Length: 170
Image (tube, rainbow, N blue to C red; front, side, top):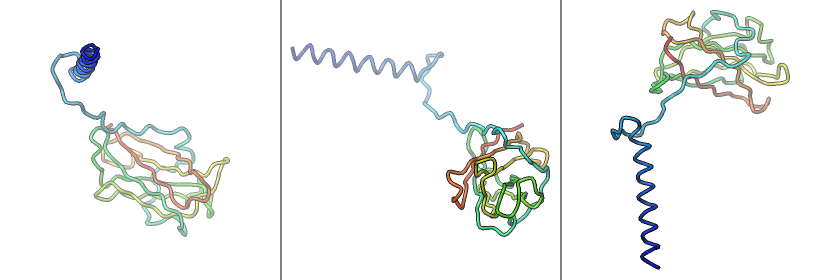
């Protein structure tokens, strides 16, 4: 009885190893290291371009501040941080509607691909508190595809929103 139990265990281990080897070798039959898929590009979100004003000015802050939009911009594939990428932001805030010119501004990412913009508190529009962010290839010479985002905040009382971009070469 003990020998039969051990034989079954050996068979199960051998079978698992064979399946694992098949998953690693792929169609060529050559053993290749397992690797991550990398960083997938961020798709444009529905409604992301609503009330977009191309070429909004570079600013240190939008309005009186009090709310922070932050994030990181990375390259699709290897995930390398992208410095000097122009990110534009706008929102419906306590100081104006998202279509108002004074509710728009742009900034550049730092050496680590990080951006930060202070703006007035975002308030609900169309029932949701949300921001708008864009990487617009027509206003940036870095050669990536345009992406528009419209992230929704968890709560209208939040005082910050972090949004990450992964950009694909055009």
